[in-house]
Image (cartoon, rainbow, N blue to C red; front, side, top):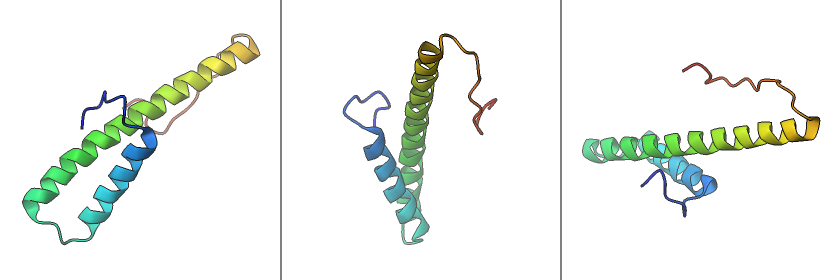
Length: 81
């Protein structure tokens, strides 16, 4: 999976990530496959986080345009890390 794949939607990536997590939690996945699934899941997670950040920035921009330049900061749990 390429993070920059324009055909991959957030919803598809999230569904794929959920499927990977469910298969990993089942406990029936061989170790080699488990590692591959973990790597794929990590890529999907980063993709989803990036898309959410893009959406957050877009919302902030729209709020500034609507309110005429307000500088209220949107707090996130992952901020600073």
